Every structure is written in C-alpha cells, then in structure tokens.
Picture (tube, rainbow, N blue to C red):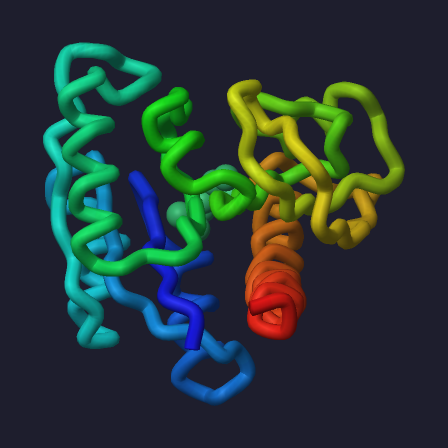
Length: 195
Ligand code: GRF
C-alpha cells in the first residue's frame, strides 16, 4: 500500500475526505503522517480522530515558505515515516528545492480553480470577480511555481447568478472532497502497477 503524508495549515476538510476514503476502502493508501506548520490547526485534530501520527513543524522566520532548516526537518520526518507521496491539503507555504528534489513527481496539491486560471489565494473570489459561469477544482503535481505543475484531474463547478463568495466556496469544496481521493486513487494505481 502506498504510504502517504498529508500536509496542511488549516481546517483539514480535504484531509478528512482522504482519510475517510482510506477508511472506507475507496483509496488504497496508508496514511503515515499528518504534518502542519500551524500549532493547533484543526487538521491535526482530524489526524488524531483517525488515529494517524501527526506533528506540528515549526516553520521558522519566513511567512510564505519554510526556512531551510525547517524544510530539511520536514524531509527528515517524511523519510523517517517512509513516505512515498506527499499530499498537500491546504498547506500555505511554498515548497522549495530540498523537498521537491527529495520527492520528484511525488508531491500533489489541490487548488480551488480550473488551473491555469486563478492561481493564488481565494481563487473562488477571483472567479466571481471575473464573472465566470464555470469554475472548478484542479489536482496537480507540485513544482517550484505556485499552483503550477502537470494537471492530474479537474472537475467543473457551476457559478450561479446568486452566488456569494461563501456559497461558491462551499460548492467548490464539495467538489474537492469528491475529486481528491479519486484522483489520488488513479495516481497510486499507476504507481503500483509501474513498481
Ligand atoms: C482547499 O480549498 C484547497 O483547494 C486549497 O486549500 C484549501 C484547504 O481546505 N489548496 P481544507 O483545509 O482542506 O478544508
């Protein structure tokens, strides 16, 4: 079974969807760690609820990335847990070379838009501001750029005339919770058959 580590900074609803899919046998994977850069982040509580080892990593002095020492420590923790894939679920720091090189094409992210449209923060608000009729979610491999890298799967989400940022965000998150476990299932199946 593919060993996965989930990284997140916040609410952890995608982490919950993934752990639930594993529990229900819809996703063949072994979650070996949940790691957050934020003390007391709800995602750590979710890990506890599902009995997955979890840890908080002290990020260092930068705001948008880990400092080099913290990134090295993260790689050490991931390796110690025999991680094969790193799954980002709302991890709010940009990953740099040390970890990208340690897990080439083994780091996956989900983003709340149809990339390459609307990378960056609050993508659903960007879609509303641009008067899009359709937006969506994207699962992609992580590279050194923000919300960039080969696309694994996308799902469209309609934007309604009556949408507020909150109502659209809610619909997008529902799509994320369905798409992420399914996209991971496909990636891991390919990986297992190539091994
Ligand atoms: C998700 O919307 C994801 O697309 C983005 O960060 C958010 C994390 O939400 N990268 P949650 O913590 O999984 O609820």
